[in-house]
Length: 163
Image (tube, rainbow, N blue to C red; front, side, top):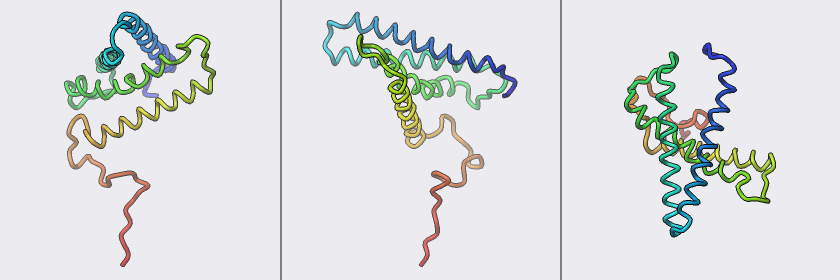
């Protein structure tokens, strides 16, 4: 698969698990340090931290893969700035979801509950990414000749009206 060693795919799990463990540790420390603040301020600080950490990790990953021979960026600066924000959407959703697993003592999660939560997170990410596509469009302009000729989903083709 593009001359990438198969063990690299297994190491991906280690990387993402590391990101999420770091997120859990920092969110727990943040929660403990701001516990005396009003709830709305706590929520704002937690959301800000999740956004900042998500963008930071996405940015670092984008920079890390930029020298991989199979990646080519049309506009490197836009990909670092805006593309990293797009990629951060995955972490913005997954960091709080991952934190919930076994967070409360006595409320242990079984595999079906974790799977349902993971599928829900994946669906939420898909919806947010699609909303980006619909309302914000591509990260870099796409020439008319490279755009899809038919808008929308291929299985919802418009049929000519019969009179």
